[in-house]
Image (cartoon, rainbow, N blue to C red; front, side):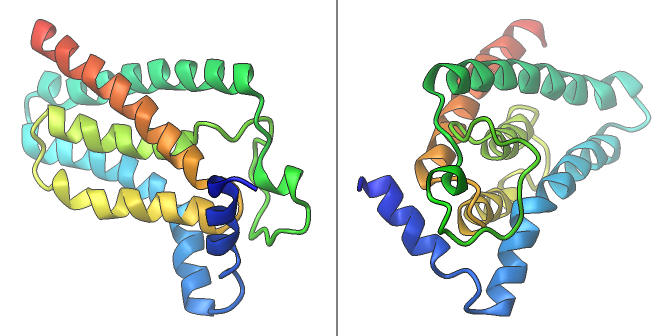
Length: 175
């Protein structure tokens, strides 16, 4: 058994032992990403209103970067064909069944949440650094609830970093 799987079993083994930790992790795994996206949209409205172009430009730019990241993630997932932990190890504790089960690496939730964070940094949004703990909470929750291995999260971070660097240099050219 490799280190990734051992670490997964250590983290996932905590599931069901503490109802507060279960609730905390489930919220991070399932719902917090929605809050991050709403934060990203709302903070753009607060910072740039009434200039509509300044409001929608970072949102449209994030959507473009997300499409690029999702395409890269899908290609990697298709090439590696790594199944989710509960498909490989049916004995693990699973908090919920995810909508998609065809791939686990890289984590799309980790990629998306880190991409929101990086987009906030690219556009110098206030409180962008304060969402980093929320991004890490999402990553923790995905492993804790049994839908991702820890290295899937690292893969999502790597994909978001690659797309974020591309986005940063693209923003320097365009804006």
